[in-house]
Image 1 (tube, rainbow, N blue to C red):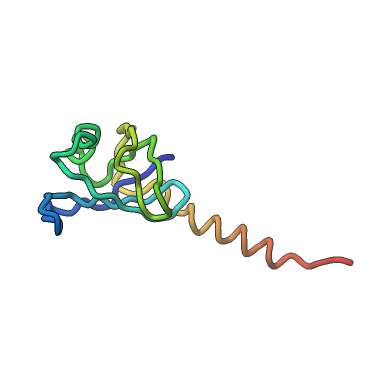
Image 2: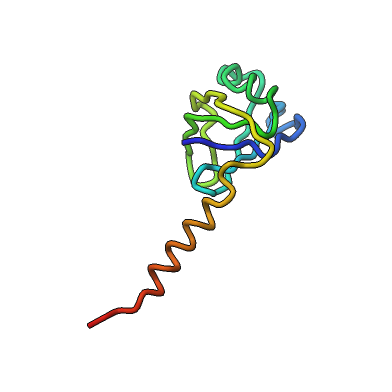
Length: 108
């Protein structure tokens, strides 16, 4: 799945003493998600070029652990950059289709 990075928080300390970076995404289906990256963990090297590119990066191969939570072990790839999310209308379009289906009259 593709995702658009909307925000990257500055490094923070976890309760376990690890420094982590929280990254926020808009997914291509219009939903929102986040992940926490720990620079001392092995998977961080995959994310380092993406965190350096910053917000506005479009990435691919994103895997969700749970709704709203990106798997930090995803083998992500930077595929582009945009000032505006290319996925802005996705959630609204999905809701409109659902609403339209609900509103269709039932003919007996």
